[in-house]
Image 1: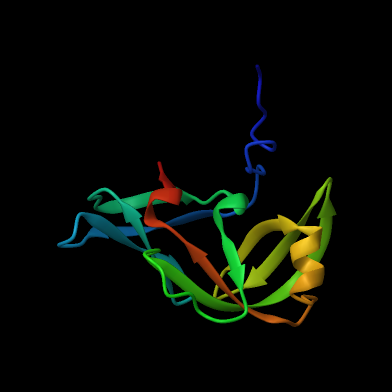
Image 2 (image 1 turned 30 degrees about the horizontal axis):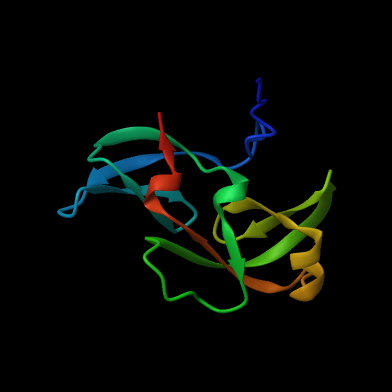
Length: 129
């Protein structure tokens, strides 16, 4: 069974951020990816890193979630595009992030360009290179 990167939730240019990592006391790395945005990833890393976040791993909500996820960013939808059976949202949150949700979720949440949303993703969702 072959699975493409796109099928696995990756697009060649989505959610790839180069930043500076510093280890934290709790076993993660705080990564400054510019634009006033810091994210937290698993593993103690120091120095320049590239962080990849699959669009399917980003949860979209209208209010901040009370969860175990280490990363919660407030942003505004700047683009909505169809991606097969799903919808891709570009969200400006200091940096532009891409999230992938179902069309049903888009409609039920009444989301469109200009909607204010929260992006939530786990530290373990971030792949560091």
